[in-house]
Length: 102
Image 1 (cartoon, rainbow, N blue to C red):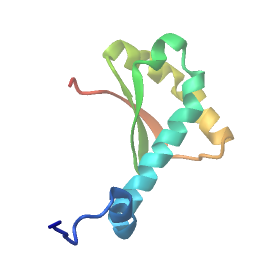
Image 2: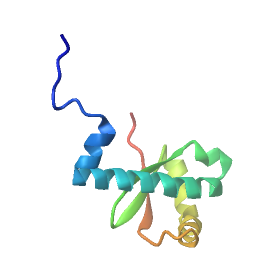
Image 3: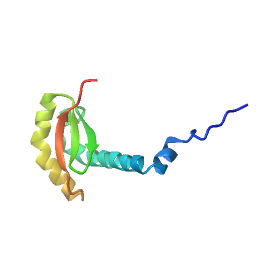
């Protein structure tokens, strides 16, 4: 006998039914799309040390694996911001943070 519960929904269905979760998913996808647009502009040696972070109304965060990568990434922010603007993404500003150690 199989048990059935009303809470046995696929994650995509649950996300689609919740306005806050739907908005979160939209921001996550936009952060990933922005990252895909700027990753080719990063030096090959820096790419593995950078990942997309949260996106909100005030900033899009790029996470650096260490302080040295963050310093180099901060130097590239104007170029990355210009590339995003050219691709149609106006604002918010890019901020760089060092990712917390796992």
